[in-house]
Image (tube, rainbow, N blue to C red; front, side, top):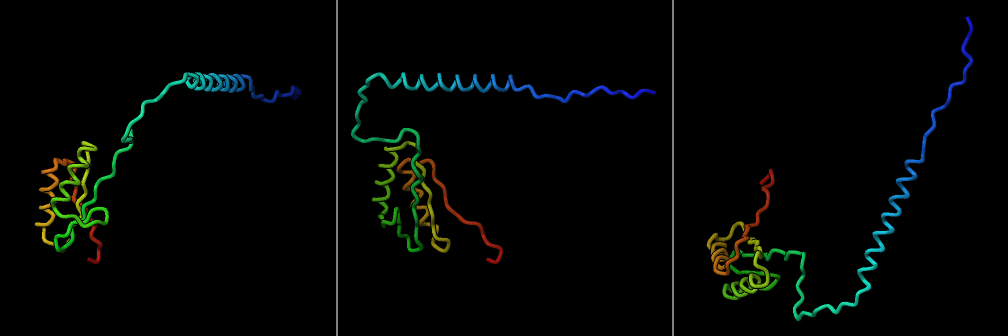
Length: 139
């Protein structure tokens, strides 16, 4: 019984398709960068504005802290109810969807928080939320 003495060909990896794809990607990105440079060649005088406003970022929510004695604090400044209403109306003019977060002390009378809610309603602020924290197991 004769034994087969043929040599087995080792499998080879054909890299030609991969190299073609890499070259096509390089050409694509080179052409893409040429388009962005062509857009800058035109001399355009941009318009100016007196009050620049960001176009994409939303403003942060206004945090209103209500202390146990009814004192209202916004941005580390004590505000009266009329001052708070003026501030919220101004914020509503600047951004129609302005949000307000009311943080009231847990032991304080709820009437103080309701006063701030009424002020938000008069200023036509629709996005109002009441801050709270999770109760720990030992409390």
